[in-house]
Amino acid sequence: MSDHHVVHVEFSAQDREAATKFYSDLFGWKFQQFPEMDYATFDTGKEVGG
Image 1: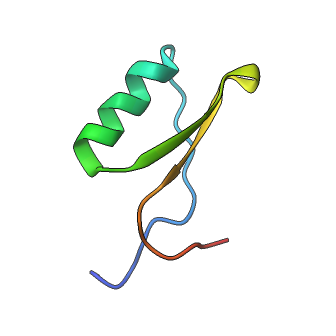
Image 2: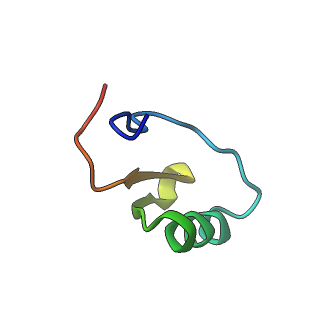
């Protein structure tokens, strides 16, 4: 299974900033924030999926 990567997932959270910090600390993901939409995307460092 190590050849399989996350390509899309959505999390709902009451505190977007706390949630992105949690997942960044846990998995090392890099987030791009879109505060005007109360949304964020992340980069896992792996290939892009779609």
